[in-house]
Length: 370
Image 1: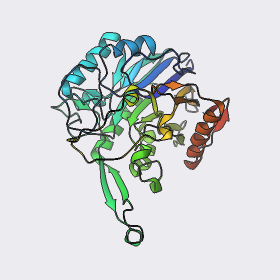
Image 2: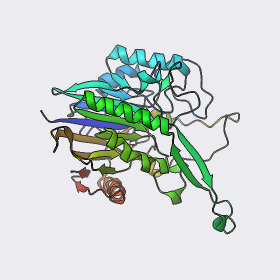
Image 3: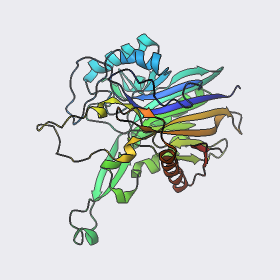
């Protein structure tokens, strides 16, 4: 087996061509480049009844191929069906036309949930994309197009000892995945592992900082219980996004074989719509939330993962290197000053340590080795 590298970034939502100063450390030299396509590529469509809808022009497919040199994108996210099935069909056609592989959405749940096989240096990589962020009507089923979904139940518990002392305190938020959906994902991961030398799962999950209950920490309850099951089911590398900031990594041991690595959030890489904010309309189908962007929403990184033979003979992550950056006024990743880089990478290291995963800071990047 010949070692190879995978570079991964988080959310990409394009309104124009990426700028020449885009942060690309580790990206161009990788053998396989992955991103999460956060906005459908379409003109028109059927608008979903939701608070925020995103859309990228059709020529963004060429920008992904020619400017970003992206090999594959994940589609299972809370915006891929913002313009209904016409928007999804347009996205798939644009990606097919430009030769960019994809996973996570399709005409049925079986199509959306299956892996895409990618060949890298003579090895096969199974790429899957699923989401835990599932607006009403977005989940694919046997008769309906949509995304591959693990639905999450949410409930709330008020602390009787606290709410009288501090009226207005948010309740404790409990979250629990639907068991049938997790079973389907585990089955899909098992099939991917049987078909490939290495398995990558892109997973849209988590809560952005401005929408969290701060006293519960950065992870939702369901993330902590789901993560080890993903590795046990066959995922060698989990690439998380949706939180619109970056978090560190957690390694999970397997009884026989190399550990699997979970990157909880890769943050934003390019998110042009945030550079052109629009006030929410008064008739928005939701409440008047106040959730302005936070400084940590500007943190970003390019994750570079070196893949080589593991202890059991299968391919495994033998090094993860997170090259940190900051998003500028156009919401594109840019090289950061040394003090800002240090601040971001130390936050990633503290997160990883909290998840009982030891990392090092080397040359301004966070580095994990098994």
